[in-house]
Image (cartoon, rainbow, N blue to C red; front, side, top):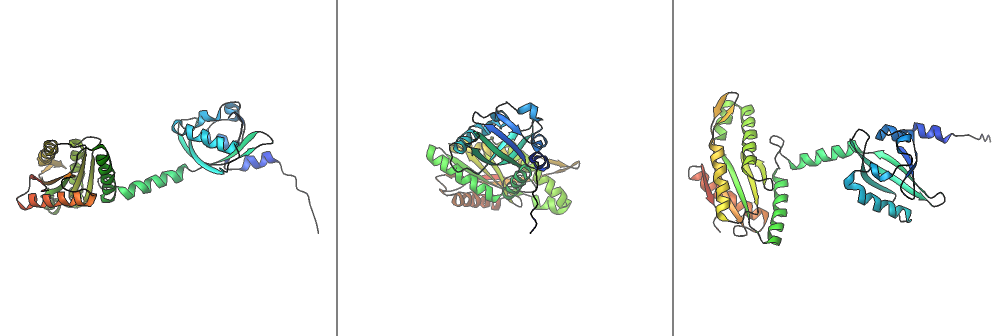
Amino acid sequence: MKNNAVSIDIADVMELMLDAVCVVDRDGYFVFVSAAFERMFGYAPSDVIGQPMVNMVYEEDRVETLETVDTIISGQVQPRFENRWVRKDGKVVNVLWSARWSEEHQVRIAVAHDITERKEMEARLLYAAGHDDLTCLPNRTLLLDRLQTALTLADREQVGLSVLFIDIDGFKDVNDLRGHAVGDLLLQQIAERLGACVRKSDTVGRLGGDEFLIILNKASTLEGMALVAEKIRAELGRAFVIDGVESRVSASIGAARYPEDGKAPLALVQSADKAMYVAKNDGGDQVVLATS
């Protein structure tokens, strides 16, 4: 049986690796970085050797990163972890680390794998799952989730909360007369106006079709809720100009308050929905309060 010894130059292996390798001493200073380190982060070895590793970590991740490093040095099992680093050009890189502590050499050896693309894809998928494609507003799923969070906060802080259920009167006529493309543009403009009528702490979402829902956080008085609802009704009553042509619609708005009109998300939405239908059946272009 033939047995040939093979001599491998570790430097050649490091040069070929796509993942970056770095070695950091007990005090957190770089003592070695591979060629891939510069490709991944933009820093040459001469830029970082002798410099604190934490300086490259995204500021919001520094405390957690240092805590993780401590667990590695102390011998606790921490084979992999994620954080964000800042490239030399200022771009943020999401990194998956595989690391171990060498007690013999008193250094931490770590391999960095760039997962920025994966993280961006996950963020896009998460956003798409919770937002309406046309208006980019929260969809029904995200709205109910936010409403549950808002109700929990309102209950804990003992503050009011209101929900406005909005249906667009006359939208079908515009959609049928001028076509779906114009109808889509109209919905986008409606979404913009709704957003301009409320605070940043409130939530505007699209339930589907020409129905929208607004969560008014900390809406402590009936008068305050009614004021916002009337502002919205007036704003949506102004003409919309699309491709140089005016289109007019109006809004039927049902308003419900927590806890008087419902204590759970669906119950509160249903109360506002019923009030909206009363407004709709009574001619539209009005605000109707839910009955407790």
